[in-house]
Length: 70
Image (cartoon, rainbow, N blue to C red):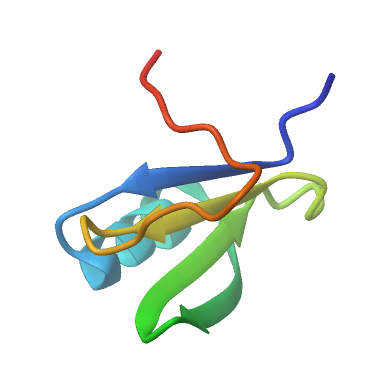
């Protein structure tokens, strides 16, 4: 089993995107608009095999998704 997509809930997407790109070194992949809700995505610089979305409290994962905390 592989986890290919993760959504991190953040309070401010622009600040989180800036942090993950500028400080952590991730690469911005896409900036989706799903049902009127923005979801920017980032990935490790080695390649887009794994995608991380930066969602707010307004984003709800779709069918086939699992939500939880580790």
